[in-house]
Length: 278
Image (cartoon, rainbow, N blue to C red; front, side, top):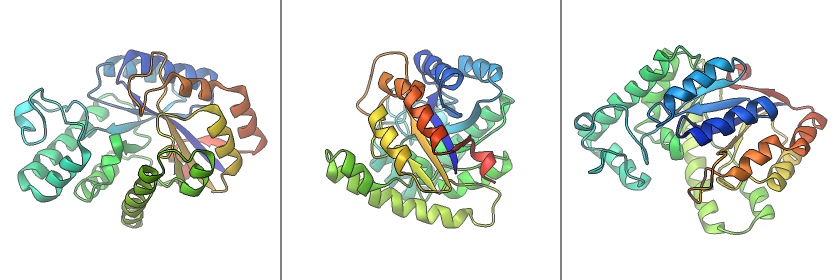
């Protein structure tokens, strides 16, 4: 069984960068998803060049973050501070129904891929902040760009609601809504990947416990996985927790856990990255 262990938000802050380096050097982390508009982007690129065994992908940001393009180029998409608002539903409606917003979104998406290419790093995979890359107006453009820039694969969330609720029944309603919404989107996106060179893991875990990927949950999850290929994604930091959904310093401890490493070895998972799934 192949297992990808990914940290999101590489380049968002120096604390997150430091956690990713530790988790790769001393833990089980195999990949990181880079925010090319992040405040610590330049440092992340320098660190990635020093870690040739770390697979680096693009973490597309089209909600709740900073765009690459100047404010006047994405005026339909940003707030008065020049940032994408943290309102995925509202932005999703705009991307779907507003032709001008779609054009600006397409230009921003292209700019993020170009900035990643300028780093000289190999594009291991593509995913999206708050999974906005699955949006019906975004994903067709994403596939074209991912193939143009020779990405190894694309993240399609496919978590396990029943298992997650056995572990933690809190937030049952939101977990059920996430399962239905992202399950539908991921199935549509998986069909569109057929015939392309882009890989997708059979299972992708992290949604049900996002920001709460503690050791006990991950150990139980590793014992539960039966898929031939799977990704588990995290939001680690060496700093303090800044948001309910992460980053979370406890997730770094999970990635560094000897018990987690031992279960991975005992179950004979092959730690890898998206290009290894092809």
